[in-house]
Image 1 (cartoon, helix red, strand yellow):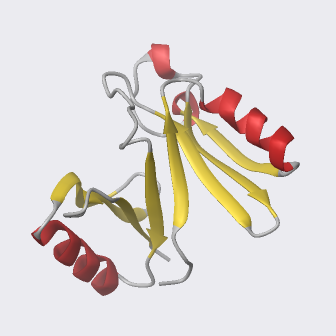
Image 2 (tube, helix red, strand yellow; image 1 turned 135 degrees about the vertical axis):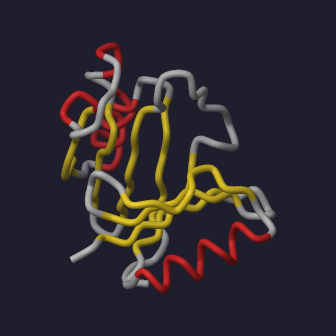
Length: 136
């Protein structure tokens, strides 16, 4: 793996507000914001302004966040996951298989529109993992 686990926070439509709050509290910077409307992916117009992916940094503190998609309610327990960036397709497949064997698959391992292989898995302890391998 390239990096240590990165906290990924999910919100019910108020990710932009949370991002501004963390920016003020931690005195950090917003590195990137992409809305659902800007993504090369078909989404309903009512989510166009919602954040699909954002990055925040202050020193060694690095957070990623997004709003939930329509119809997906965020509750305590599913509002944070740990994102891991893999170095190869073999590595992501191995971790996906191991974590999902005794856990549950929230999103099947698949090729994505952002040029990566990605999966979301809840392990047997209830920890949610975002597995990502960005293809060269």
